[in-house]
Length: 611
Image (cartoon, rainbow, N blue to C red; front, side, top):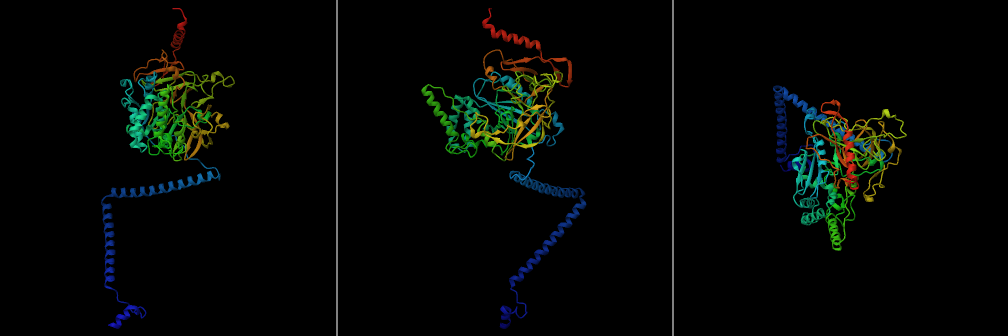
């Protein structure tokens, strides 16, 4: 026994005798066999049960097959997307190194998605909603406020206007359904901004100080509110439930039908869409406009403004284009203004602090954020490039809203930048007078909005790389300027449709592009999404009879705006003819215009005439 045990130890293997196995190993092998047999039985039973179930339920079998097919297709799509991303990355690297011509990222398409045709008859778009945010400071509203509010109704299918105020004297009952008035109470604007900015900048312990300083700033310089335009989407976030997009805007404008100027593709694919006056082409100005800068309500666009030093947390550099050394911040900026105002008051001097605008730091932050998709679209009219007369058609009675001017008027800004301005006939123009389109301010506006939202512009050709510099927009600090190089011949070339300045600009994946477009306007007219009267409002502010009364909501009306004011135009069918259901051809009442001009002349010269 001793000898056998010894050979079973070290030398049993050498003699070809199988060594004795420990009892623990034998038990392990037994349990392993049992486990394998059990798993096999379970698999067999499951397969038999599944086969029996599918034979009893053919619909379930078909559903399972479809599920498998969808899974396989999804995997194939995922693989293709990864391959496409890899190809785009390789192409970008090749383009950056000059290895060859590659296609730039695609711009928003013209017809994206498939909206429900039944939604075309709805009063609101079934998928998208844009909030235009306007905080108003002051006890009195601007004299043109009624016209502004009436014009907002024309975009009710897609747009709401949220007007925040401090118990201003507003006739809420006279407002269109898509205009919301929100009173924050006396000094409530400063309190609301102070609380929200303290939270957003991560300084809740400074809430009381921020509230006090902002209340003082808003009460002393109401214009100071423009500094905080980029923050509106976050400061008023509690009021934006149910909206997909938001934009800051102003009151010194009238709106056409914005639904005719925003496409579904832009709502889906862009992070930010801003409208320009055409000066992006004529002067190379690439900045977000204070009248319209539509942001997608998403994490990608939230709190971008924190990169600006004057809006950032105290002691921070802002972390972006606005950074300036790490010693500033929102609280520091407000304290400096308050201290200077106090010193000026003690000396009996007037003091107006410098205000930062969205045209500066914030525009630079957006234009240096490579993950954003931004479009600068030429779709607004402004008084400093417009014709002498601008026509506003208010919606109502089945008529669509429109903001338009005659394309062939002197001073229409063909050389100064407008929304796809058709070539203006001049003395050197070879076009005979018989071929020039007549200007009819009452030409039928665009058709009713559809859920597909095709917009009024169509791209022509591919995206073309754009060179930028910083030598434009002199009122903006040099470190914030973003300018397009428009020194090439392309900037002054007319498009195939005879339009000048027919270029839009894109910032995609950290690179700049330009693209030609063609716009749809009634013959002889230029239309804009908005009309901004930056200069004319100086006359509008003066007391006098220049501003006509506005009809109640839902009642159709038309006005002509000039630098002296605005007056009504008579809506009258031309010869009783009609161009379709709900729209008619209208003529300008020359007799009314003549009488109105004579009355203005009498009022102007009344002090010098006897009697």
